[in-house]
Amino acid sequence: MLAGAEANDSVARKIYELRTRAVLTQQQLAKRVGTTTSVISRLEDADYEGHSLAMLRRIAAALNKHVCRSEPPPFTSREVFDILLSWSR
Image (spheres, rainbow, N blue to C red):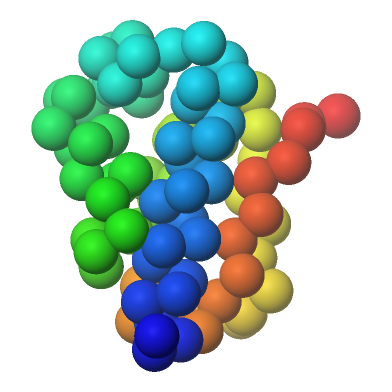
């Protein structure tokens, strides 16, 4: 598996994990974020390559989390990066 694909898979799984821990449907999260259910579905797809830092921050805020990343800008889904969404304190 390529590094970029691994990163996409990791982000997708983390979004899904945090959404389900919050006991939210994709539709409920979409409403909180101000987007559509299809966007949330796409973001939770391991093959999706269009993750943006702005959208990840919106999702994190909707889940009372914050985004931490290990790579400096520019942030693209094809770069090797490590996204961690952790509890806001």
